[in-house]
Length: 317
Image (tube, rainbow, N blue to C red):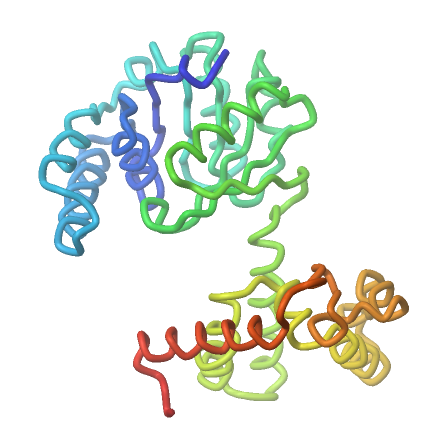
């Protein structure tokens, strides 16, 4: 199968994520069948797509003509067999319950054409477990979209133990063609986003549970600092900017003081510290800045933060 062979897409589940995913496929020229178990769910999803597109028009992101062509490519249905009958690519977007997803994958495997790729929007579950109930484990893959899927660009691609290179390549190409930013993760519970996000959310709850601070102050810490920084830079870029050696010392102190294995200094950091590659100040850290103007990099990053603050109307400059 090649990228051009993908023409018809079935999205199974019209709820919080499903309708937005269907919108993205239809917006980019695919014929989409949007399925849910009740007509009211399908109708609600279709109405939400209309509202999404109207907002895009208001913000100058699309045109009424593009909206109409997008809607014309979406066929809502409560008939699963009809939704899957001639699908080339299937997106499963049912609630995050393993038994429910397994049952759906059994039905998808039976009803969809044998060449169809079966993708799951699961945010946590192992893809191999879902693939195990099908006769085509090589064509089963994870495609975890972010909420809201018609706005946020990132999609995690998770390869199961038997997912073929062809399935991986086609899924990545489809997402890239639609303007998404695919990242590939090994098959682990939680993948990338929820492993990182989960650690943050758990620690936020720990601080409040232990009476260290209020939930309001945790939110302010994120809203007025962490969220701003990490809206612009990834954690490894941030470490290079802040100084890997400084963060390594922080981990050493927290680990020795709190005796908490969560704060054990990462080996990845120690390797950089030992090599004196600690970020911008040495010209090399997790990234190599050789030949680049370090002052210009710092100025550019500061300017981006200022622009973001001004946009959010949070600047006190």
